[in-house]
Length: 399
Ligand code: PHB
Image 1: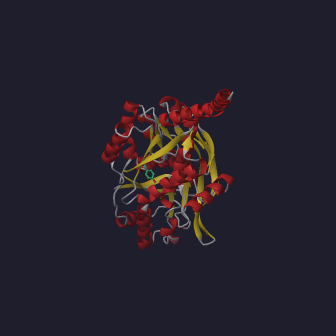
Image 2: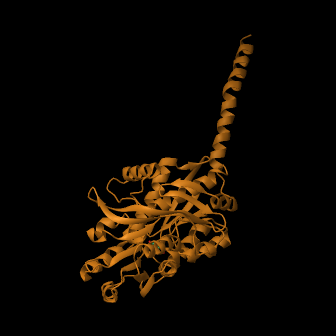
C-alpha cells in the first residue's frame, strides 16, 4: 500500500517536473548552439578623424540601446577595429582578420573610400555582406555585390547644389576639392549640373587629402574674384582649418560666398568652426536641425546617451540606419545570417530615417535620399544647418 502510494507520487513528480527538466535541457542545448552574431565594425578610432568614429560608434550604440542586443535569440557582438584614417592597407588587413580569424557574419562602417575599395574584393571572395555607413564615392558599390550603402554619394549630394547655385544668381564659381575619390566626384558632378544650368567654373584646385595648407589656395581663389567657391573636404578637422584660412585671407569679407557639400559644415564640428561659417550654403542628406518626429526622437536618444556631446551628425545617422538595415535583414531570417538573403533584404530596405525617407535602390544597392539645400544660421546660440529647399528621391547620378 505504502509502496503503491510512493510510486504514484513518483509518477506524478516525474510527469510534472520531468517534462520541465527535459524542456530546460532542450533550451540550454539550443542556447549553447546559438553562436553570437558577429559584426566587424571598421572605423578610424584613433588619429585625426577619430571624432567621426565617435559619431558612428555612437550611432551603433544608440540603435542597440533602443532595439536591444539580441536578434532571434542570438546575441549581437560588435568587433571594433581601428583603421586609423585613410589607410587602405590597414583596413584590408583588419577586414581579412575579421573574416578569417574572428569569423564575422558581416562587415560594416568605413568612413573613407580608399578603405572601402581595399576591403571590397575580400567581401566577394568570402561572401560577406559589407554595409557602408559612410564612404561616399560613387564607384564603391560597383566593387562587390555584397556591398550595400546606407549613407549617400557625393554626386547625389552636390548635383542639386550646382543646379540651385546657377538658378540663384551664382555665375562664376571656383572649385576646391580634396584630391581623392569623393573630391573628384564632387568636382565633376557640381560642375556638370552647374554648367548645364548656365554657370561657369572659373578655376579648379585639388588639395592633398592629408594635412593640406589652405592659405595659398584661398589667396588664389580670392585673386580670381569668383561669386563663390565650391568646396568638398572630408568632414573633421580640415574643415576647421579651411575656415581659419578663409578668416585670415578675408574671403567672406570680400563678398565671395561659400558653397559646399554638407561635409564642410557637419554638425559635430560646426561650433569649432565658429561664426565664420554663417551664410555658407550646403547640400546634404542630414541636418541635426531637420524637423521631423523621427529626428527629434533620434537626437533625444543620442543626447541622452552622450550628454557631454558631440551633437549627432550625418555619420551618426549613417551608422544608426546601417544597424537598422542589418537588424532587419537578420530578423527576416529569424536570427540566421545567410549572406545572400541578407543582401537581398537590404537591397529593398526602406525606412523613415532621422534624415527623412531613406530607401536602397535594388539595382545599385545604393542609398536614395532627399537632398536638402541648407544655410548656416544661428538659432538659440547654436550654429545650425537650416534646410530651406529640397529634392526628393535623388539616386546616385554617378551610376
Ligand atoms: C570618403 O572617403 O568617401 C569620405 C570621407 C569623409 C567624408 C565624405 C566622404 O566627409
